[in-house]
Amino acid sequence: MSEQVVGVVPTLKKGKSFGRWDTYTMVVTDTRSIFALMTSAMIQQIGKEAVQRAKEEGKGFFARWGEQLKAHIGFSQRYMDMSPEEALNENKDNFFFNNDDIRTIKVRRKTKSRGGEDDADYIVTEFIVEARGKKFQYEMSSWNGEVYEMLKSVFGSRVDIGR
Image 1: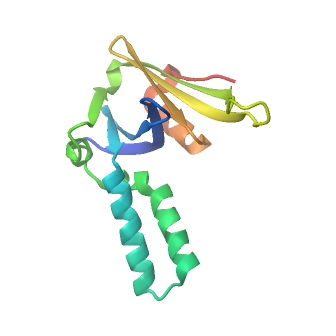
Image 2: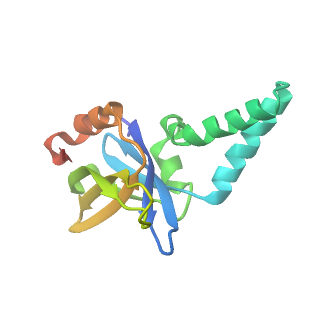
Image 3: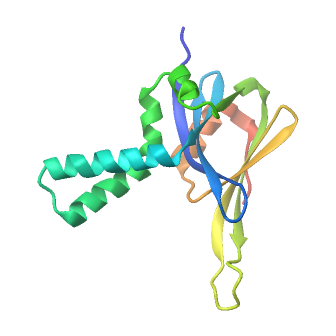
C-alpha cells in the first residue's frame, strides 16, 4: 500500500529575525510528517491565478480581492491532492520526520504583548513538535477541532493539548 496524505496543519510560522518568519504547512501522512515551506513566490502566484480566474468570470474589484484572500487561506489544502513525494520535493527546504520519530506534539495558547502600553495583548497558538531529540517551535493563528482530531488519529496520546 502506498503512503497516503491524512491531513494538513496549515500556516505554521517559524520566527526568523526582526519580525520575519518562514511559513510551513505540516502535511501528515500515514507514515511521515512533511514540513512544506510556503515561499513568497508561491503566495504571489496563487494570488495572481485567483485574480485572473475572477477577472475571466467577470467579477469586480472587491470580488477579485475576495477570491485572492480565499486562495491564500485555502493554500495548504492543495497538499491533500498531492502525493507525499510531490509535497516533499516541491522545495529544497522542505523536510520530514517519520511519524514514529515524533515524540510529542504540544499545542498551547499563549497571550503575547504587542509592546506598547496602549496596545492590546493578543493570543497565539504555539505548536511544538519534539522529534529526534530536538524541539521545532511554531506559531499558528488559528486552531480547530478538525486538525486536533486528525493529529490524534495519527499520533494518539503523543498529542498534548494544554489548556
